[in-house]
Image (cartoon, rainbow, N blue to C red):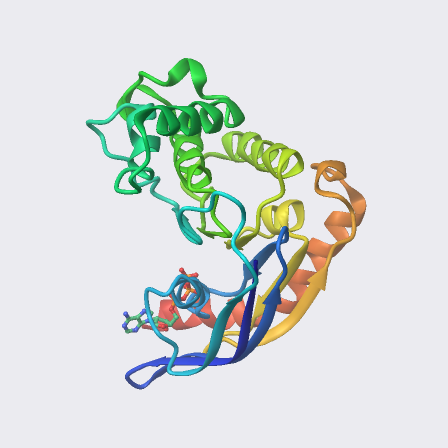
Length: 255
Ligand SMILES: Nc1ncnc2c1ncn2[C@@H]1O[C@H](COP(=O)(O)OP(=O)(O)OP(=O)(O)O)[C@@H](O)[C@H]1O
């Protein structure tokens, strides 16, 4: 299933958040979205997820959903959004409730995604008993359980320390390599964008417009920290964003 955005614009009152965004996200691609604070990254995700309707333009899902897809679009947030009184298994199961499936089928799907996210032995743990990185793996498992057409990821690693972030990036690459998924991945972190993005969209600030789309050919599992070619892409992204980030910074200080 492919997502197409055609000339999408959105405003909140007098604030023009996004202007004239056209993008196509083919199945199996991770598209990273970067840009200075307030450029409309989260708005873009909300519009794609159907939480808000764009003021102008079209967003369409094209083609058939993947086999056994229970929900075409799922979110992964920075704050994990786990229910504290449910176990790891119970949190993943949550995504499968109200889909009218047998208990055995549900258990099979949960076991499968826990295995893919290396959580099997923690199935009975409560969120407070596990680390932040593991909590985010539970959120990823829960998103994968519905076999979505597209995962919408809003700063999923930004609440984690840098070592945990590295581990989670490795996990996401391993998951994608085993079974490619489609994702729109919003981040402030350019190192994350060059590790995880097949393409990276740089948005300009207010209104957010597509400033540039950078494509990275290297396979995800061939990328890693200290890779010179990736660092060069990261430097280029920073050059594109630097002035606007400085302006955003000044605005916050002045305000
Ligand atoms: N519900 C809302 N009502 C009014 N203005 C909003 C609303 N949501 C977002 N905005 C404004 O729209 C613009 C884009 O916001 P958005 O949160 O999408 O940006 P962002 O790039 O995700 O920001 P950040 O990087 O800081 O998370 C900002 O100027 C913001 O203040």
